[in-house]
Image (cartoon, rainbow, N blue to C red; front, side):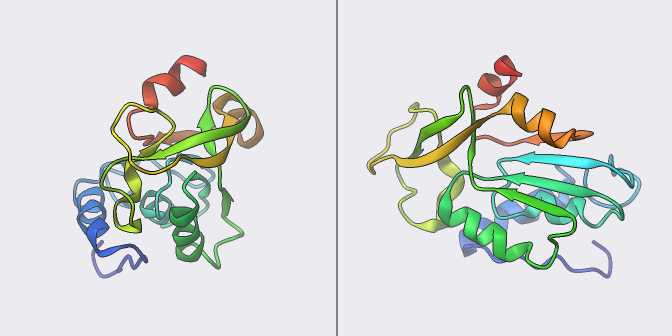
Length: 167
């Protein structure tokens, strides 16, 4: 990031994820020649995690971000990381799903602690030991209509193909 630092709260085990997202400009949000964002853009960040992509997007002046993160512990970290940016950020503690209403969020094996929260999903496709967490679901179409994004980033732990089918 040049002279600017990106400082976010996160479990130590997530630092590698942050470094990879930043060093590879994984979402194209890093300011500079490879940035896909322009002033006035609205980013819908589905699977916002602790706010890495959102924090990068907000480095482009005039960008607003809608963060959608279902896991309550991860959402709390996200909320703290983006505190003070309420003028540019809308946060939703919910899961994008095929239908609105209560949804089961599965924390997959090895993710009982908040150190690996990004392995939780609505899809019962991986082994899990914990009970599912009940979260509110929202349809992708509803988010698109409500927020009219110009850029959509979806990192939904394998659920992208299901989300695309309902868009």
